[in-house]
Each structure stands twice: as structure tokens, then as C-alpha cells.
Amino acid sequence: VNEALQIFTRYIAGMSEKFGKPLPFIGITYVAMAEFYYEKNEMETAKDYLEKGTDLCQSISYHWSEINTIHSRILFALGEREKSVQLLTENVDKLKANHIVDQLVQSLGCLIRLLIILKDDEAIKKYRGYLESYITDPSKREWEDSAMAMGRINLYNGELAEAERTIK
Image (cartoon, rainbow, N blue to C red; front, side, top):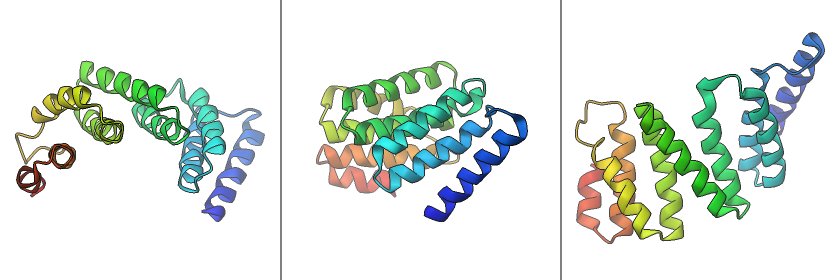
């Protein structure tokens, strides 16, 4: 991990020197560094890198969902649970409105994990309904992520047989 961080740091410095300023695509590197620091449990540093990366990536709309998911996990780890859930909820709503199903299901999975930790039964019930509409066709790419998230909900609700059936 430390070697990867050194490589990223040299890359950022080299690209910034070459172009005279950090370019938007460099933001993805900052986000990757935030994930490494997250894995190392250095949450404040992770948050700093994520904020730099997010600022730079604002003009690259393709990665906003992934960045918000990472940002939410870091906020949750820092104890900013309400802000974390709000960010993921907004992410899910935006993805649903834009019909970006694969990223929607991934964000739903992350949101459901947080809601289970928080024991927010009402919200879990709401998002369970979202998932049920994506779990119907095993040939669809997002089916596996939906099934895993539904299995988590079933386990949380004590529905062990249903959880086993859903995950299989």
C-alpha cells in the first residue's frame, strides 16, 4: 500500500509539473489514494484526498457515483453517519432517476449495509422494494449485487431460509 501511495504521489507531482496545474483526470488518482488511506484506517487523510479528488473531478461526470460511494464510506467511518447516509441516499435517487442500473444496485448495496448497521428498519423496507425490482432476472448484470443485498436484508430480519435461497 505504501509503495502504491508513493507511485500515486509521484504521478500527481509529475503531471502537475508537466501541465502547470492539476487536471481533472488527476482527481481520480486522488480518489484512489483516499481509498488506500481508508483501507489503512487513516480516515482524516482519506477525507482530505477525497475532497481534493472530488473538486478536480467535478467536470468528469462519469465517476460521480463511485466517488460519492467512497466519500460516504469515509464519512461513516469518521462518525458522520447522518451525512454519510444522506449522501448515499441522494446518490441512489439520482442514479434511479437517470436509469443507471448497475451503479444504482452497487450504491443500494452500500446504503443497505449502512442502514443495517444503523438499524433503520423503515429505510431498509423502502430500499428492499427498490432491490426487488432488480432481482427478478438472473441474466441481468446487476442481479448478483441485488441478490447479495437482499440476502443481507433477509439475514438482518432473521429470515435465514429466505436469505439462503436469495443468495443461492
